[in-house]
Length: 60
Image: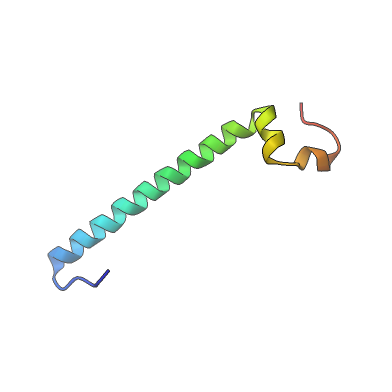
């Protein structure tokens, strides 16, 4: 990506970057929310993590 030569082109580039960052932030937030919901399910939590085994007592 090259640096804009005029002000209008620079604004367009900045808008494009801002839109990409907003999309990335949205996807990351959705990913975190989905991960939290998945970790509330016993079967998925046992498949994803071994923390309960390391603690010695299962979370109930």
